[in-house]
Image (cartoon, rainbow, N blue to C red; front, top):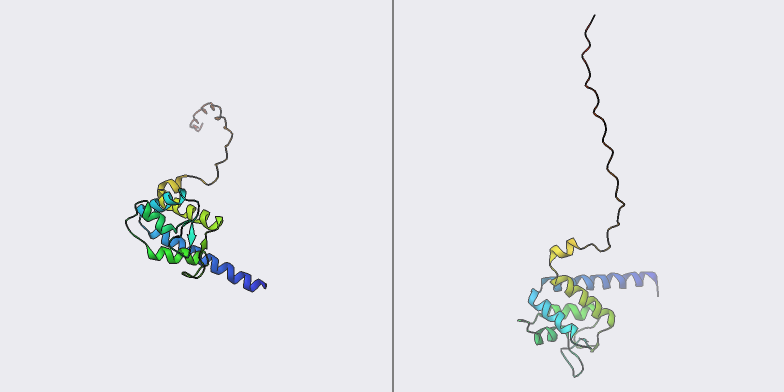
Length: 147
């Protein structure tokens, strides 16, 4: 496979991820929380279909956990992210796809202040610097008197 073709596929994958991220961030918090709760309670997440006997799509999981609406834009972005045209290739989601969706949903429902305040890596511990010793007060300069 040529490097140009590989690069083109990487760009398309990055764009599909951005679209999925945008739809997750646009959905109401209640739907995101219900979807995440459903994701934690199932073994099989489906792509390209609403449900089968073994698993369900993220939207159905959200609905089963009390989500008030069915976001169809999310379904399109989810299927595109997974590389599946609607009802063309019905399959179980890969572990990578499930992990990416879980991370996006967790980021969505985490308060923005908590995201900003929590460092991604711990700050280095700096050794304590001793306070400088007290310096004697310098004598006040005297005025010189001409003799």
